[in-house]
Amino acid sequence: MSTLYLVEQGAALHCDGERLIVSSGEAVLQSLPLARLEDVVVFGNVGITTPALKRLLDASATVTFLTVHGRYHGRLVGRASAHVELRRAQYRRADDAAWALHAAQQCVAGKLRNCRALLQRFARGRASPPEATEQASQQIEQWLARVERTTKLSSLLGVEGSATACYFGGLRALLDESWAFNSRNRRPPTDPINVLLSLGYTLLSHKVLGAVEAAGFDPYQGFLHANEYNRPSLALDLMEEFRPLLVDSLVLRCCGDGRITREDFQPSDDPDHPIVLLDAGKRRFVAAFEERMRTMLTHPEGADGSPGKVSYMRCLDLQARRMARCVREGGDYTPFTAR
Image 1 (cartoon, rainbow, N blue to C red):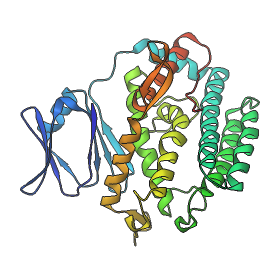
Image 2: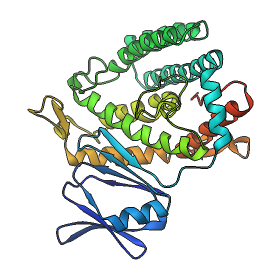
Image 3: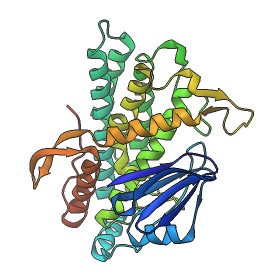
């Protein structure tokens, strides 16, 4: 199963029998079998015919709409799952402040462990590891020790915010200075690295949302992220541990090996988008993201409950099911962590 990304502005998607056709004017850009498609991600001004939408929903494929710059608009899904008991249990756990805090602590701890692993991994690959990266790795270790000592969600969020700021300081030292990345910023991102991070997190949230829904959860009821209208808080909770592994590492690689260059960006007069990623660079980045999602790794439950090789895409599903088991039965949620 695969994801179809529609990037070409002005293109149109329609169905022809059992195939989906992407066209621009008289030219056919792509033709692929509907049966092999899991979801469609639409950037900006791309048309989809009503018959094509119906066929996609009947085939349980989701359609996600983003702005041309990658900001999330919304999502079309088919029938809701019938996991009523899981959702009832999810709401009860969310109302249990102690249980919810503990689950939130596990999500944050998983994220910080993977942040530290990423910094250490990339630093080891350098002949002269940046001092700032090594310092950030050590400081994250100290923040990690504080996670379990927090007694309120507000305190946990404070620890998570401070540790993340420290992490991005270490990440900055791994990038060439020409990228002019100083810190994480968004709404709007003001430099190329932040543009890529924001786009990558949007793509990842879309994947995690699908895994959470497939497990039977209400994606809008989380434990770490507060409820907010139209915000898939549980998907954002589970996404935390994967941010460094699937997006931050990808940005470092793409900007380090030349797949993305500064020429892929241009300044804009739009104050909401002061710098934009051009279409050619966007295509290369989403292709690299899909390649990353197909990367194989060992998951503790990858082979019917025993350690086995799975793709990152499958890893998201397994983690959502781990959370479902904890919600039903109690116990600790174990985030996925890289060595």
